[in-house]
Length: 184
Image (cartoon, rainbow, N blue to C red; front, side):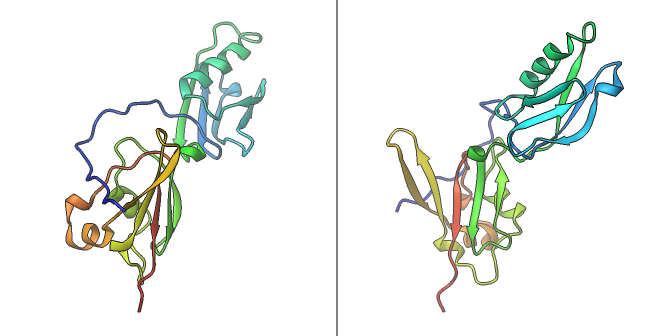
């Protein structure tokens, strides 16, 4: 299996954030606090409910698209509503999460962020577990051209313990990092 390519310099995000299930959002309707909603969670079915707006689909929309949709519904009740949607805590769409499995300190699914690297992900899950074989870890990434998953070799132990920056790899939405346990 080929080694994963080291991370390049950070660049501007290429796509807008899409709201996912379990995201925590705040909806503010200017001059109408009774219609605003503080820190509501997007339901598992991808919908939200606020005063006068029932069961609106939020998943898969940008915050700007959601605020426009809410505004359109509120136009029936108030004149010229100004709506803001703020993402307080992101989980992200399931297809855009980074998954860390195996012998990490705390295996988890993380929301993908622009310019995210292996180092960012490992810090977020607390590094390697006590019995992890970090230099035998793999990255599974879907290749749209071939329609198949491709496995890459990772050197997590070198990255985390030796500070080897060449072992830091740029992540993409949907990547899975698998960390095996050491053989005794």
